[in-house]
Length: 356
Ligand code: ASP
Image (tube, rainbow, N blue to C red; front, side, top):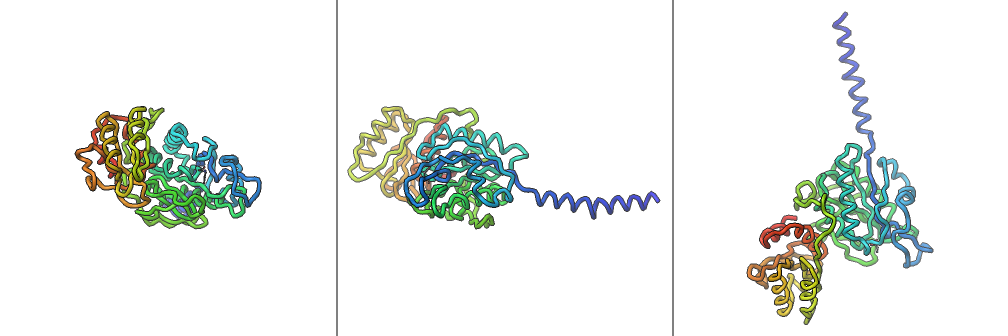
């Protein structure tokens, strides 16, 4: 009698209770928090076909409510962190976003984060978060090229796809991602390439992390650089970042801007150099003067693709410069701002530029 009771109990557990629990777990929707910062995705115009509009005019709740089916993908909570065009994105807002993510992701009730953001400086915020988020859970930035009121607005489907990717366990451990126009980009590699085209973001050197179509993703690439949980950069106690200026190189450039930058308190200067991070002789001399004053000079390039290599046409070892490797000027500035939170020799900074 006792024995058959045990058999029944075992039957109940194996055949009924366990599968039921699995079904509940498998069917569970992920919990996604959307941190809204503004941008064209939250923009509005007076008509659906005009080019003039105001960025950051729509709230996150209105944006979510405008996307059919998005609430079937995930349990969504929205938080309005800012509502600016990303030309007005600042380190203050970026630090706020980073700190909020680092508060939310360690909890069991958040599976992923989506950040709505303007496209103008999206690559900078994405790369910044890639360096300072302390979790391998998905963090996804999304924007749009057309305002929410436009005919054929691209924001709603981009947002739908971003929520799907942020709730997808396969997105874990790939660093911060950007979703635009069905493409999944890595923060390290993407760059904005068109002022107006919906297909504006490209990852020219490394290609896509994956694609996403109507919420169905395919991942085929994992970025090889250090990021998030492997990153040494921590902004928990940081309220201000050191000043780093970008100076654009061109034909017959004057060295005055380099001298002015060093004289006005920049701790780092990124040269958006010609070709392989080059600049004319007078500018090399000015940059070398800046290095002697303790300013870190990074040579990046104004050319959209390709590496900036060390000791190619300039002797970086002698001049004390750092080569940006694959980072464009705007991302070099982000990395250098974090690097300069503590003093380091140029050799260590060079090593960081090739591993992050
Ligand atoms: N100026 C806008 C912004 O970056 C452009 C956009 O979002 O596409 O906020």
